[in-house]
Image (tube, rainbow, N blue to C red; front, side):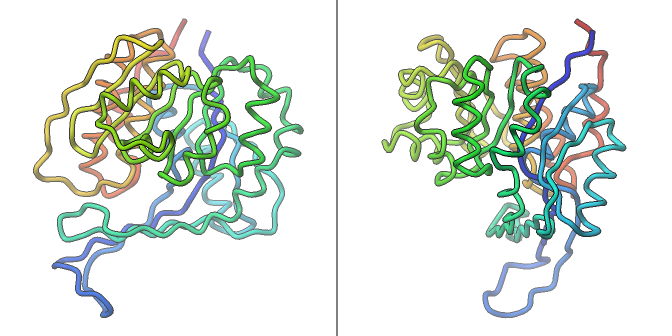
Length: 299
């Protein structure tokens, strides 16, 4: 029987700008702009679908042509999509990379995600109840996050931090989190202590989070579970790459894919790191080459 993975979060249209030369502020810079489907949870969903998973995605799609295109793309990947009725425009994300093709500045207009409120969640209660795991990101409104943790406290939550500010939305629910994936800055913000990665993992596990993964750009990834077994996954630096947008989402998807299949957290992170490397070589937020890692997901 194929596992159906439930994800709840945002979808964007990504505009990724790469300058040909070092950015000069307050003037027009020559470069290349790529447009693709994006959004942390949408990217995670696409990656999981390309890996052969059956996915159900609760997301906010704008009442415009871009929203229609986002839906069509998800459906073409075999994803089951549920979205609320809204008059808002689709969520847009603009990433301005530096000359090294690493993120310099990003701006996200995702007000449409507020339509993923508790009433929408309640309308889809039967769908949510049928799943063991609930995968969410901190882009969701605080009210929705609180509602999910309170109503579905018996479920296993897998959470993406998103940003140092947004991760704080999880603060009152840490003991209900089955797995938290974050970077060093998000982890520091969540517990309000500036520690190194290994110590951050220990501090988060002490908050009764079941499993913790802490990354730090291209450095080694630290992880731990059940207040013990803190370890690391070595990350080899990639000198030449095309784009960094979506790499964290590929890492997250890889962890989910293998961890839910019963592999160790370390092996799951290693697989996710491999997917992140593939994504580094793509102009899109999700590399089509992820499909090369497809395999039969049978229990």
